[in-house]
Each structure stands twice: as C-alpha cells, then as structure tokens.
Length: 564
Image (cartoon, rainbow, N blue to C red; front, side):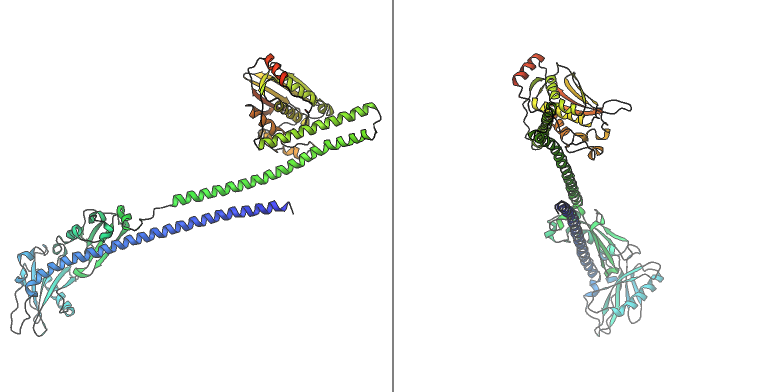
C-alpha cells in the first residue's frame, strides 16, 4: 500500500496540472470571445452612429431642398382656388430669373403647365423635344391620381425614355375640388440642392454634441450622396475608409442615398469607455506562460519521482554496504569472544578484518554526512597551505588493508613539492573516495596508479584504474548524486552513488575542478579520474611546518564509498 501512495499522489498532481492548463485555456478562450463580442458591439454602435448621421444629414439636406421647391412654386401655391371661369396663369410665373439658377442647365431650364381637362401642355423657357414632351404628359397624367390635395408638391422619376426624366409638379385646384392644371419643372438635385449639402456639412449637428465635444463635422465623418442611378451628387472634401460606415436612402426627389463613414481615428471618443483593444497577444503570452509553468511542474514531478527512485536505490545500496561490514565485524568479534581461533595468526587476521571493516564503515558514514551537509549548505572548510604528497601517502597507508584484501597493487608517484591551500580532512576524503572507487572497479590482482604533480599554476591528482572504463556519454553524469552506470546497477560491486558527487563538491569548494578521461587508447580499458587545485604558491618547507603543526589525528581514516 505504501508503494502505491506516491503513484496515486503523482496521478493527482498530474491531473491537477493538466486541469489547470485546460482551465487557463478555457479562461483565455472566454476572455478572447468576450473581447471579440465587445469589439463587435462597439463596431455595430459606430455603424449605428453612421446610419443615424446619414439620416440626419439627409433630413437636413431635404429641408433645404424643400424650401427651394416651395420657393419655385410659390406663385401658384398661394393663390386662391379657381372658380369655374377663372383663367390659368401661364407657366412663366414659375420660371423667374432666381428660379432658373435652381434648375438643370441641361436641358435648358423650362417650366410647364398641363391642363387636366384638355391635356394641353404649355411651356415657358426652352421647350424640350416633342418626344420628351410626350413623356412629360404621359408621366404626369399617370401619376396625377395619386396626388393628395394636402401635398405641397410631388416628384416623378421616369426612366422609360432614352434619357431619364425627373419632374416636380404642383396641382392647381378649382373651388369644386377638381384638378384644374399642373405646374411643373424638370427637377435637378445638384442644382436644387446647391449649397445644401455643404451647408449641412459645415454647420449641421449630425451627431449628438455630447459625443462630438465640439469637433467639426469633417473631423468626425465623411459624406457621399448619390442619386437613384448611383451617380455621385456630393462628396465631402475629406474621405475616410468605410470601416464604420452606413447609409440612409431617401425615396423623395427620385431617391437619394447618403453614405457616412466615421473617422476611425476618433472612434474611441464616440464609444463610452473607448473601443476595446486586442489583447490576443497578452492572452497568448499568459496562456504560453501557464503552459510553461505546467510543463515545469510536470518536469519537477518527473524529477521528484526520479530522485525518489534514486534515493530508494541509495538507501538500498547504503544498507547493503553497511550490512556487509557489520556482518563481518560481528562474525569475527563473536569468533574471538568464543575463543574459536586456532592460532595466533587467525586471531591477528580476525582483528585485522574487524579493523578493516570498521574503517570502511567510518568512511561510509563520513561520506554520507558530507553529502548531507552539502545538500543543506552546511559544509564549512578550514583551508590552510599544506604539502599534498604527505596527505596522499597517509590516505594510501590507511587504505592499504582494503587494497591488500582485493590483491590490488597501488602504485604511487607523488611530487613532494606540490602544495595547495586545502582543508586537510576534506582533501583526505577526496583521495580516499577516488582510490576506493578505483579499487572497487579494478579486477582482482590489478593495479591502481596514484599520481600527484604540478602543471603550471595547478596541482593535479590522478587516480587510474584497470576497470571497464567510463563511456564518453556518461563522463559528466558519474559526478551527479545517486548515479551509477547501467552495467554496474545489477553487478556485485556495491556503491552508494554519492562518493564522486562528494569529491566534486569538495573540490569545487576549493576552487578546483574534476574530470574523467580514458586511461589508455586502443583496446585497453581503464579510467583516469583527476582533480586540479590552484597552486598555493607557498614554499614547501613552510607548508610542511604549517601542516605538521596543525595536522589532526588520522586514526579514524578509512576507506569506502566510491561509486560509479
């Protein structure tokens, strides 16, 4: 049950992380949709403003044209109704000089009178062609039944001829309520609306003043007015892109379409709170950051599981390494206690084995303590100048029983002049771990070489073995905690997985570096582990005196804890 709990906890954490990512994605999507909806709403609002402005503009222009048309027909509009014998005014009363300026220049300006009873058509000014006269008579007589007495005028668009015809006419009534005559002109919006569109553009309140804040119309919007055929009648000097545009159609005067485009540069001022700016980049960045954090969480979880597995392997390895020498100590101690030795040489051998295994246990415990302190940043060093060859020899002497038990020949080549500023206890631990590692992985009856010398401004310690060597891909990984080569995990060679990690940590705290390289080329195997420390620059004799004065008791030095 205990082994299942971490897996269940990991499953829950993975689910929580993935759900967090899904939730973040859902929130980002909803925020994007909300922003998009808000933007669409503001765009519709701005287009509604454009439609409203188009309607206001058209109404204002229509009022101006309405006043001009009433002025044209004023001579016949304000007269009394005709009696049975009253005469009709000629069309000349309409075609006054001021009116001619409001009529189309092509064809030349004219006015007409159509007697309803007889159908007689009379013209003032330049009469149009006979074909156009027939078209005028036909269009008016067909439209006349729809005329309502309360109307001030009526417009007609006739497009059945070769040239479209646009007319405005006014009915003259008799006292009995019948239509006496029709007075009319050919209607021309550009001429009739002369100045009307520009006047509205310059002075009209097309948009509510509360929104425009006193800005001129040409800074707020642009206008294009087209006739029923789509021909432009008016366009404001400034034109804006149709991003926020709409139009209003006016059926009067033959049909007018007014299109207004809001200036995008002032769109924010027309919407309360301004238009929402795109946050897609921010949402994408936040979602990406969430994904990175989730990925980091998953990697950390994976790393936690890996560390848990490595610690389990470490506990198992350490337990094995502790159990083996303890079993040896107990067995030979019991042999001595019960007096089962048969000779003095057996008694001495038993004591040697007890001493040897006790040293192994001591060194293993020292390694574990150093590693634990390093992880908690509790390692405190007391470096001092010393002659390293002396320290290496003493470490090798304390290690001799272990090497002898495995029939390993340790060959040393030490430069007595090599000096460095080191913590003696820490340096001894470095030497013991490297030598223990070399002996552990060397074949029986093999050789281990220990070399100490000076190279430039560094002191280099090398420990070479005749083992199977280190694959280049694992040359750095062997220095990491709990790591062991795949080939060694299931082998009979015990290892805690922290010996080389302790070596690197202690050497780096001294400002040095560590490494491993192939001992020999060709088909021969073996590894060369090296440590480089800064040269102290202290004279050998002085370093020796300092070391002799401050050297602690080395009685507890032992050997164990190397790993690969």
